[in-house]
Image 1 (tube, rainbow, N blue to C red):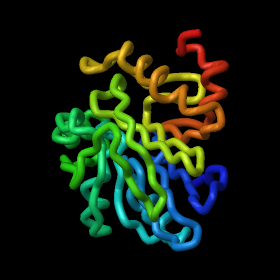
Image 2: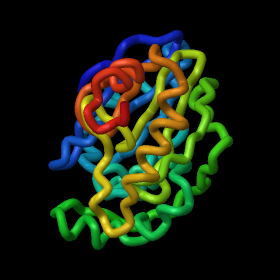
Image 3: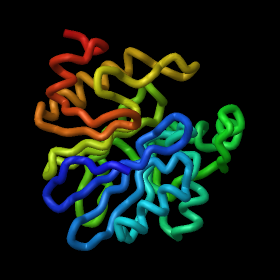
Image 4: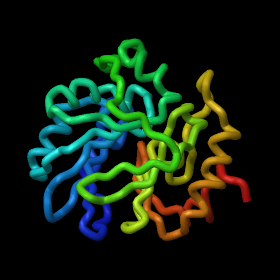
Length: 218
């Protein structure tokens, strides 16, 4: 488990899970200790141990998209914690319906899951009073969403943009052009000072990727 940079009352910790080393992110308010689990792809014992170590009272689970390494543990964690799931966009329903099949291909146990709430562009997700705007950013998957907290200049990115890379689009449903359009028209304009936690690898900033990411147009 690693900690992200501190923000104004909003804290984050990353728990790498599954053989894909996916960044399951714990977000919580420092005062109330209420928070959320973002993208519990698997290894629920490790996620629950981190929740206990940090003393977080989990109020919800949030999914950025429907791939196995992000959503594989969501059904079991919802049942264990008695909380609801929000996200992703409904365009990823087919992926969530087929999580068991996805898991079998990679040796990751999983059950299909239907969120309690699908997310749309322009809606918000609230975590312990901290408001995140929802941006629908398809391309890596049709229903990928990005969550933006302007007060803390923090983005939960999923697999849309990484440090030095972008999300894969070589799936049958992938769309490279749509991914680049979402990044350039929705994410880069947010501002260079936004820090983002992505689905794999280290955190970065919008400014750093705008300057140096080789996959983005200049």
